[in-house]
Structures are given as C-alpha cells and as structure tokens.
Length: 328
Ligand SMILES: NC(=O)C1=CN([C@@H]2O[C@H](COP(=O)(O)OP(=O)(O)OC[C@H]3O[C@@H](n4cnc5c(N)ncnc54)[C@H](O)[C@@H]3O)[C@@H](O)[C@H]2O)C=CC1
Ligand SMILES: O=C(O)[C@H]1O[C@H](OP(=O)(O)OP(=O)(O)OC[C@H]2O[C@@H](n3ccc(=O)[nH]c3=O)[C@H](O)[C@@H]2O)[C@H](O)[C@@H](O)[C@@H]1O
Image (cartoon, rainbow, N blue to C red):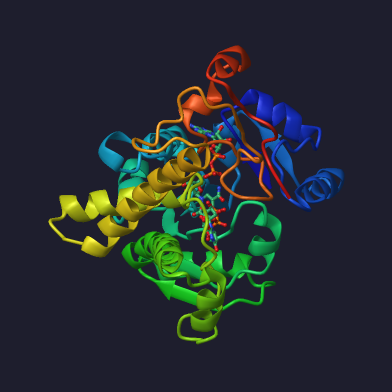
C-alpha cells in the first residue's frame, strides 16, 4: 500500500514511523507494515496510483462557504490522477461528501475503464484502529456491482455486516449517521438542562431511558456541547444540501441550534460561578482549562475556537491559559 499526501513533513515523519496523532495501536501498526515493506508514503500522488488496483480518496472535506462541504481537495486529486490511473482500477471515496460526489468524481475522471465507489468511514478519533478493524457495518455504494464487490473483498477478513447499495444511499448514510449522533447529544444536553431545573439527576434519567434497547445508552452522556472536526461540519453540510434542494429538515436545524445555545448557557454558568451575572461576560476573569480537545483521548485541536489558538503572550493578556491539549 502506498499512501500519498500533499504535506511533505507528514510524509517524511510517517516514513520513519513517526505518528503525530494520538491513536492507540497506530504507531505499532505503521511500524510493523513499514518493516514488512507492505507500506510506503510519498508526496507524489501520480506515482502512488500508477500501478494501483484500488485507490482510496481520504481527503479533507471541511466546512466551506455557507456551511457546505468544501470538495476542493477531492476535485483536485481527481484531476491529478485521471490520466495516470491504470485501466480497470477502482477509485473509492472514503471522505464524507454530499450526495452526487461519486458521480462528480466519475465525471472529473472521465474514464469509462475506471469504477468509482462510495465507501464512507465511521471510525471515531482516538479509536481509529479498533473501529476500523471491528466496524459495526461496511457500507459500499456503487452503480457498478463488480467494482462494489472488489471493494467488499478488501474487507473479507473483517466480521461485519455489509450494506451494498447505490452511491447516493451510501453518501447519505454517512451524513445521516453523524446527524443522528448529534441529535442524540443535543437531546441529552437539553434534557440535562431540564433535569437541573426540576432537581432530577440526568445520569439516572439517561440510564433509565438508555436501558430500553430501542433507545440505547450510547451517546447520551451530557457535556459542554458536541464538537470535533466532523459532527459540526457534517450536520451543517447536510442542512445546506437540504436547503439547496428545497427540503425542510427542522429537526436538523434544531439539533445544530440546540448545541449553540447549550454552549452559550455553559459560558453563562461559568460566569455565574465566577460571580458574574447578567450578560455572562467573562471579561477580566482568569480561567484554567483542563483539556483543549473536543473530547478525551484525542490530540485533535482542529475544532479549537480561534480565541484559544492565539500565541501564548496574547492568550496571557486575555488571561486565558491553555493547559494540556488532551485528557485521558
Ligand atoms: N477524522 C475522522 O475521525 C474521520 C474523518 N472522516 C472523513 O474523512 C475525510 C478526511 O478526514 P481527516 O482524515 O480527519 O482529514 P485530515 O485533514 O486529518 O487528513 C487529510 C489529509 O489529506 C491531505 N491532503 C489535503 N489535500 C491534499 C491533496 N490535494 N493531495 C494529497 N493530499 C492532500 C492532508 O495533508 C491531510 O494529511 C473527511 O471527509 C472526514 O469527514 C470520516 C470518518 C472519521
Ligand atoms: O465522521 C466522523 O469523523 C466521525 O465523527 C464522530 O466521531 P468523533 O468526531 O471522533 O467524535 P465522537 O466520539 O463521536 O464525539 C463527538 C462529540 O460528542 C461528544 N459526546 C460524545 C458522546 C457522549 O455521550 N457525549 C458527548 O458529549 C464528544 O465529547 C465530542 O465533542 C462519530 O462518532 C464517528 O462515527 C464518525 O466516523
């Protein structure tokens, strides 16, 4: 397997088995594969795909203008590889993308002899290796069943149900999954506010409802609001495509708005705890933050608010000090 990346520093580090993200078992996995000459890293995308049977696109699809998914990296790489892909190879889109992207990539490639398949990824950060090797399901969407089968065969060693479908359904499955998770969290966070108001214990309430298998106990732990590099961008991207298509999805809008309100309420509670009432201003308050990442067990700071990214001196002037990026 050859991995191509546009970041030369990342390529150099990975060639030496230096993994700069916090992912249990990943450094050993990379080291073992490098030692066995089963893995290589390069900055040369064209060379990486020149003899490939299957090409996975695992490119960033960040939130772009107006909340839509920015597909610039996917489109750039499709243009880069279209003339060098060997005949008969399959291009697999692993990035989280709006419905229609599979078709768009096929059009950009302009190659009748190359299959294009959607195969969304459902792993969680901090559990990437574990989730990848023990997936709940494998979703593969393709117009060409032969191409789909070839991608399915790559996962033959994994014990997971296979959902074989069309590209649009596969692409939408990924957004629907992240939306549902975000909806569950907005529900739990809202419910925590209701429990506070009525003197009820949110942990007991979520245990009480989570024991019903139709509801399930996962993803009901209330927190300061859901974040990360994916749930926010993916809920906004889904909302944007729905709006563009003229489909109203009030539940989706409410899920996002509930999260924003919940985060504002948290700031107001901190302000109140610091003896600042009224407008919830924290001006002049000295704060210590324990854990800057969007959840425990990851070193990913991509979702960190801009104010906390300032250089240390500027942060000190604002009397906000970052402590450690991640907590266990
Ligand atoms: N991070 C996660 O846990 C999950 C991410 N996803 C999806 O996977 C996709 C990738 O996400 P991440 O891995 O988090 O992004 P990332 O930003 O960490 O990694 C993407 C890599 O692509 C490289 N890159 C960017 N433009 C390039 C180009 N033109 N040519 C070659 N390499 C290029 C970057 O240097 C970077 O190393 C996104 O669509 C995301 O929604 C899906 C499930 C889980
Ligand atoms: O598409 C993606 O990138 C991924 O997004 C999420 O994974 P991840 O972003 O790693 O984070 P989660 O573990 O889902 O947590 C998301 C947010 O919800 C919060 N959370 C999670 C669970 C919970 O009970 N309570 C809670 O507040 C976390 O603190 C965090 O802020 C999904 O869980 C993955 O299935 C998906 O593949």
